[in-house]
Amino acid sequence: MSERVDIGGGVKVACTVSGDGPPLVLMHGAEGSHRMFDAIVPHLAAHFTTIAYDQRDCGESENPVAESTLADLADDAHALMRSLGHAKAHVYGSSFGGRVAQMLAHRHAQAIERLVLGSTWPLPQALEALNPEGVMRIQSLRANLPESAEALAELFLPKAFLETRAELKQIFRNAQPQSERSLRRFRTVADHPPFEPSAIALPTLVLFGEIDRVVPPRVTEAMARTMPNAEPVLLRGVGHAGALQAPDVIAAHIRRFCLASHAHTEGGAT
Image 1 (cartoon, rainbow, N blue to C red):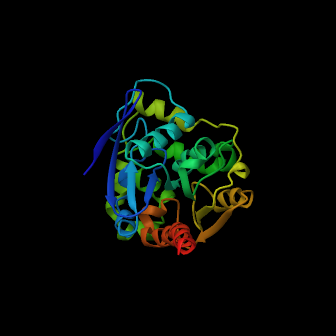
Image 2 (tube, rainbow, N blue to C red):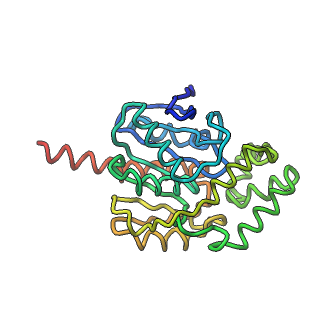
Image 3 (tube, helix red, strand yellow):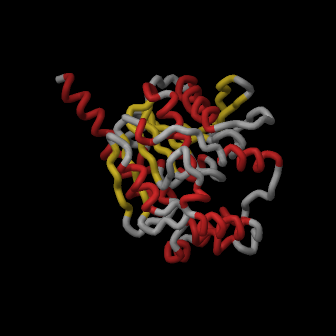
């Protein structure tokens, strides 16, 4: 069940906390909500206390009618962790959520145990410059919703997968029309702060889909290669929305990578 946590400054964050174990914060993409993690949480909740939440101007969260930046979103995540009683947590950010996670690592590195980035790109760069054809295609299809919903869905998820999960196309058909809130979110997503991934020294797992048409795998892999303590992992046959398409595979990588830190801690204590 979702709850709203008042983190101050007029921001009430909608979140769902599940499971038991070390805390794991889940950060959704640009136009998503914490519901994008519904399929992966059951694969994680036996090992982690999962914290899936809605960012500002998304889902069921409430916030002031004002512009926000990636720094604001990172500070929100940190405040949410502290409000829930966690000084430190593992963090998994997917797509734009990976950019929020990067910003959290720059601003509050001490609050992150291990970092997992999925299908994302470096903070200083615009996706339009890294994948111009893909971004133009997305914008064109969004302008023609709901008629273009199926074609838009196929940019985020493989066509063969969608044939077995046709209900996922409804996510795109239900996309909200332009509103003051959605336009504010669009401007937040366009924020490109000058912080390089190479400055993130945290142990980091970087996941990227082999057939990602939104953030090409070469982009995410190249970013990982600049990070001093990153492990890049190619997900065969996976598109952009990996948490929807391959939740079991991604959860297995998260468990392997994040639980290793607790095994080392316990080993050192005995």
